Structure formats: structure tokens, C-alpha cells
Amino acid sequence: MRRLVLLCLLLPAVVPAWGQAPAKAPTVFCCADGGHQVCGDVLPPQCYGKGYREMGPQGTVRRFVEPPLTPEQLARREAEDKARRAELNRQRAENRRNQSLLETYSSVADIDLRRDRAVEAVEGDLKQAEARYAQLVGKRQSLTREAEFYQKRALPPALAASLRESDSEMAAQTSVIDAKRRDIESIRARYEQDRSRYISLMEQRGTR
Figure (cartoon, rainbow, N blue to C red):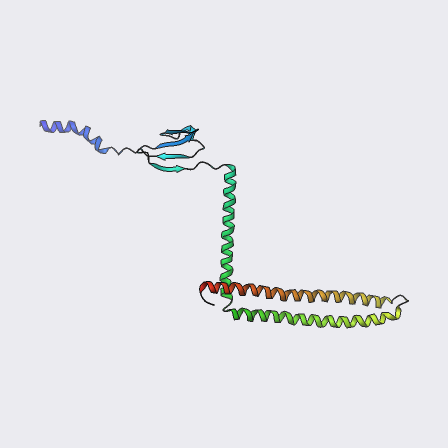
């Protein structure tokens, strides 16, 4: 009976010890302030706005918190981030163009064939424009000969209007011819770029 009473007396003292959770290791916050080390179990006021360390009881650094950026540093970081994003977008766009190029052409010969066909189509338009210009030149020469009869007199209104109209048509046709020639140069340049890039991509892949 005595033993039972003694056990009942000891239980209240023993049970709380079993039920207690292990104490959490304290954290110390430290920073440098004016060349001196400032620490505390909570972040000291001297550490506000500065970088600080969270340290364990043995002095091991658990975490280092960077100081907040200055306006100049923040602007520089934003500029760097913007430049990185722009470069990433450029690389993605280039990769898309490269993939599209490889899907469009099957070989260098295919590029040459398509170039020649495109140039040939515009050259056909150019020849028509040049033929039309030759007709206009003939018409203008005829009007000029007719106007020679009126060297000392005013030109008839109808003849004067025909001369102005002829000059306007010739100028317009010259613009058409120049545009067609520029188109041919542009086509050759574009296909040459595609050709060079295609060869470079094939060489990177080890094929041609």
C-alpha cells in the first residue's frame, strides 16, 4: 500500500517532464554598425536597413540577409534584368527563325531553285514594264516631231496636254521599272541570307 501511495505522489512530477517539447535553439541576429558587431536575440534597431546574419547557438550562420538596394543599385539591377530579358527574347526569336528555315528548305539546291523562280517572276514583270516604257518613248518622239511645226507659235492645247501626259506616263513607268529592279535585288539578298544561314546550321549539325 505504501508503495502505491509513493508512486501516486511521484507521477505528477514525472509526467510533465515527459510531455515537455524540446526547447527551440535560440537564434541570434548580428550586423556591423560603425565597425562594431551588434547582436541580439531579436534584430537590433542598429541593423534595420542593413545586411545581417542569423546565427545559431554555436555561432554557425544559418542565413545571411542582404541589405536593401539603394535607388542606384535598384535601377542598375532593373536595367540588367531588362537587358537579360531582351537577350533571351532575341535568342528565342533567332531559334524560331532557324527552325522555320530548316522546315522551309530541304537543301541548298532547294534554296537556289526557289530564288531563281522568284527572280524569274519579277524579271517577267520587269520586261513588260520596259516594253511599255519603250512604247511611251516612241509616242513621245512622235509628239515631239509634231511639236516641231510650232516652234514659233503656241502649241495647240490638245498637243500640249498630250506632251504633259506623255511625260507623266514615262516618269511613272520609270518608277515601276526601278521598283522591279529593287525587288530583284531584295529577293537575291534575302535568299542569299537564307542560304548562308542554312549552310551554317547544317554545318553545326554535321550535315549539308
